[in-house]
Length: 185
Image (tube, rainbow, N blue to C red; front, top):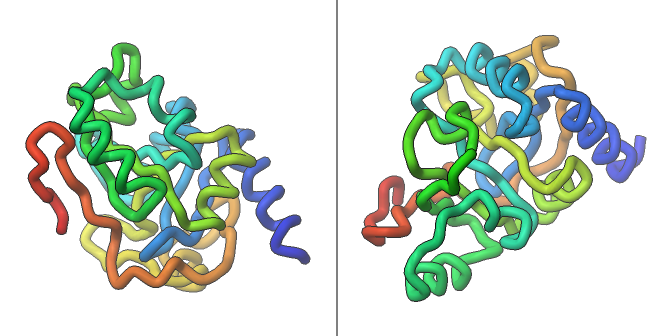
């Protein structure tokens, strides 16, 4: 099966409310449609994670992501856009109406515009935005391969998009957009 076919299949699963594992910049991630509350709930159950943890939204472009972000001072947006596309996740103020299952009930949102081609292509084909969280049960090391994701979750996933990760040694760093503070270096 070609990688283009696998990508189309994975994107179709996501559009249909599925949960998949896929390679990201540093580890395998679990993904779903961020506006599908049932799919997000499945990820929480798979990971054994509380709703108040919130999720990272992964996007293929700033244009796709910006409507979910509340306005920031110009210089803060300059810092963010200078780092994207790239492997940095930013905590930004959430726009009104962003579902609480994405924000964890906070008024902020974790966002990343990825430069990792397989993840960006998956975002594009699935509709532009994905929930992104490391593929591991809470307390276990993140999966760094499709095999490890399958070992962790087995047939409880709707699919696994195989392939190598982007080579980072760990999950992407997280930075607060308002303070500039690194929350996960």
